[in-house]
Length: 214
Image 1 (cartoon, rainbow, N blue to C red):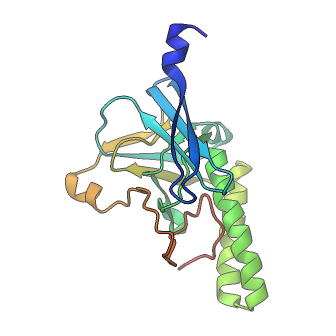
Image 2 (image 1 turned 30 degrees about the vertical axis):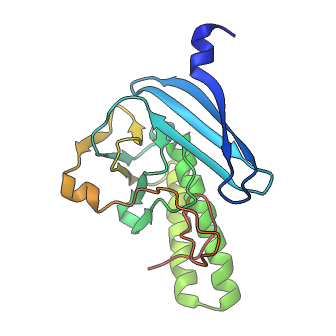
């Protein structure tokens, strides 16, 4: 491994916040076109604790990116979603906010829609089991819209907001806006706080399965 590669790819060790055993953290540098250098961080422990994030290696303003998805080409637009990123689909009233166990990921718009669709499908199954006709109807409606968009039959807007500027949609069509300090303060950050004795865990719709809310 060259000196440059060793600086971009390395491991560190710490203690697992859950079981306190040794935890290896993998750091992998990457260069994303039109976005710059990033560092992917990941770790997983035998006790099932896991963590992943993507850090932008330059100072960023709090940002909002909005992309109107109206064709198959837009589905290939790259998406960098950090643990502090909030994804919104205004037309459907969907907000995917970072929670205490959020993962970061680099994907495309279609990948983001697939993640949301998986959660919707799970919510539909729960609504069927519970006999909740209102939630079932809403879930089926959202399911159809997302499926149509993925097949290029319908358009909608995908928005990502990040108070730390560590998330983005990369496209020539994207509309980017610097958030005001007031707007940035309203966003969840996804900062990780572990409470082994606590019973309340906030889930992230992109990473966990839970029911739809109105």
